[in-house]
Amino acid sequence: MSLIVTFIGIIVALLIYAVRRRYNYWNRRGIPHDVPKFPKGNIGDWPSKRQIGVIFGDYYKKYKNSKSPFAGFLFFFTKSVVITDMELLKRVLIKDFQNFENRGIFYNEIDDPLSATLFSIEGQKWRHLRHKVTPTFTSGKMKHMLPIVLKVAEELANVFKEKVTSPKVLEITDLMGRYTADVIGTCAFGIDCNSQRNPDADFVSMGKRAVTERAYHGLLDFFIFGFPKLARFLHLRLTVPEVEDFYMRIIKDTIDYRVKNNERRNDFMDMLIQMYKKQQMGNTDEGLTFNELAAQAFIFFVAGFETSSTTMGFALYELAQNQDVQDKLRKEIHEVLAKHNNVYSYDNIKEMAYLEQVVMETLRKYPVLAHLTRKTIADYSPEDPKYYIEKDTAVIVPAIGIHYDPDIYPEPHKFKPERFTEAEIAARPSVSWLPFGDGPRNCIGSRFGMMQSCVGLAHLISDYKFSVSPQTTIPMKFVPQNILLCSENGIYLNVERVGK
Image (cartoon, rainbow, N blue to C red):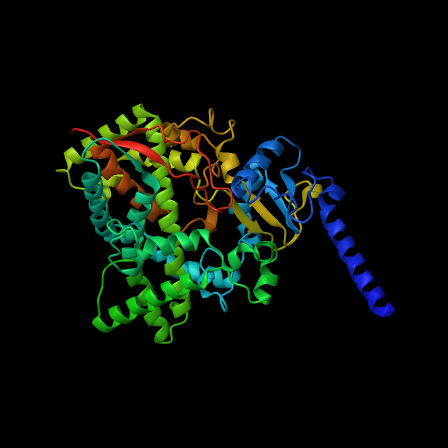
């Protein structure tokens, strides 16, 4: 018994030593940092008080003028750096990408196949998959999918027409979510979801669950986010089983139906099915397995549904507070449509330059994924050897901190779409706008996301005026526990029809 007690005592002592050593890591190296607190390190305010991206943004603001190009950070027990220097950021995302190509986040393709997406997988597997999927997001493919988006946007306009027979206060985020659920549901799964008419549509409820709910009710987030490799070894999962069953069933039914009936729709699912057929014929270089196909369809839906709907909601929130911007945008939309017989097309949408600037400025103020992550493959030393980044260190890019840096964006809290003229963009550092990331691992669906957001906003601003109501929360408050930025109490705006 005494031997057992002694053994346990030694183990406990070693663990305490390891924790203390890890928590003293940045202090030993003389790197600026906040003192970490056990067991969450520097992430103590998440998820109860501050949204995680906001925490990193505040950290950037605090340490951006220090001599070091990064600040030390502990995410639970994971050594992390928060980048505070734009030149180092450019190296991480672009110039020295080969050492930072992995995100270092959890995925488990065996026990949780929907987690093994293009967003999360690593190494050669990521490179192969990115190469396979990239052609599905060219401008030519976007033109083919635009009629689908326009059809859903017309339904959005009809829904508003029925709801707004007189000035009325509406909760915007739910309506935008139903629009993007129908767009992505149709393009990714070929299903007419009818989410805009059906308040209980499965695609909307499952989409929200996929973004906000985690397996084990979040109780094992400590392992999943803090020790992704250990979590994979322990066969942990991120996706809620009901969500996985729902999407796997729909994807299987969609593939079976289209293959059996030789149906083509010129949508995202068509492109995935063609790659699936190649795999079935033995062409593994260009093909996708069923699980790979399912994971990419799933991330396309989840990413496109949540990010675009949130962006549209935030855009309307800002336009409601900036009537001069809204009037200017409406004038542009009317002028462009008047030149083209009031017909929307891919080229007409691209002609609405101010509309794109409005969306870009919205994404500056509200980057839905407010921080990016990378992980060092090998020790990395930019210039001064003191500021090396050790192998397997998590590298945090505080996007929202950069977006609110007054040295990059003067008066950062003001909503000014003119920041995104070609001249203004050229005058800033190349990696200073990061809603879609940058470099070889940027968001592959950024073109599609911009397109569906612009199309939906054009239909709404053309016919409706949005203004603040007594229920509008100003300033915006974010849900602290969510990984993505979203409004805490919804976005309530007054809506009324306008004459053309």
